[in-house]
Length: 308
Image: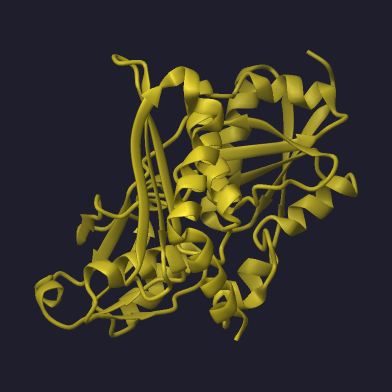
């Protein structure tokens, strides 16, 4: 094996480091030398504003993009749902690891009576907020920012009834508590539960190493979801959910996509099953359906409200 040491760039949160160490172990097992380089992202530093107010695409990924372009690291490991659908020039998607749990969960204080009355839920995600208000219109939703450890601490110390988390993140660092329920009615963020590794376009050695880590089923499903997101012109700034699942027995893809208004009152959705051969344009055509069904108008309204 060649002598080059692959420098793995990552955020410095517990979850991000867990992801980086997972990639490191897989590369080490293949005989590659590695070194982890941790940096702090803007999204981890500025915690007093909702994400949409910061107006930065890729707020959790930009610092690592710069580190790669400057040659300080060779690859970057991310939660795929944090990565913008348009990558910076010179940076490419090198591997998507096998997907973990895609479900959102509600972590609560041991009492769920509030679900049938008034309650206050915390989340920093417009997607989760809109879907929660769609199902529970009498509830209040408050902003909650920070890495998963900090958000869990804030929930425990706060007076909210509960907070919404991605199950995968809590499971990966053994932080999933006893008091939770699966929100199987909530459509997850595009690529939720998947880990993405980026590399430099001209770095053939590193791309070849990472190709061994790629899971083709996860790659296809996340591609569909991110294509849906990109066509709707989403990102962190619109309540968009998407989930593609491959059915091996039927050789089909089941896709669910949804766009909500910020208050959750309006909902435009697609739900379809297509042969696997149609995967390449499934996200695009599904998004076009949403846009043609009042989605263009709703996206414009969302953008105007977020500018104010």
